[in-house]
Image (cartoon, rainbow, N blue to C red; front, side, top):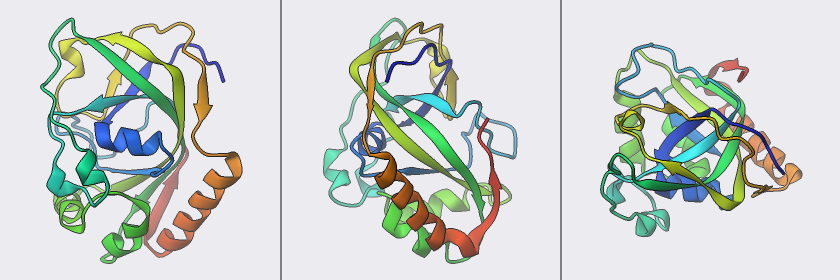
Length: 199
């Protein structure tokens, strides 16, 4: 698949990006970044490049086998070359609420219960959102020159004009992805407060 010009990238720990692009993971749980003032998490586009980050990755936050894949890498500096390995299509955005959220989500993600509990407790007035993501791996990584504006605790960064993106391949078949989403929807139906259509 060849696409033209994605203007947004989603920042996520590199180990989670690897899981998304290996077909091990189809969801992310978000409340927004510290630098994002709006109380409601917003998705700027339904197709976004994945932007791997390393600075806050934690072995303690990950279950096995993913915790063994956490690597420590310094924060990129202005002008450093970055390689972006793939992109995702955001097919569903769901606001969740309920005391058994941790238990219901457990089979579908890679984080520990303790880390997720702590994450969900941050800014309790904000709802937690689950994003369902279908991953596509670039045949050749997209090259990007790092800029300071990409830093900080934010979910989204706006990219320069990318032109034609590298060819990419879905990491899951359509049928396999749809089945995974259906299983997730069944599990979280009792705690789904609302569904938001990605732009």
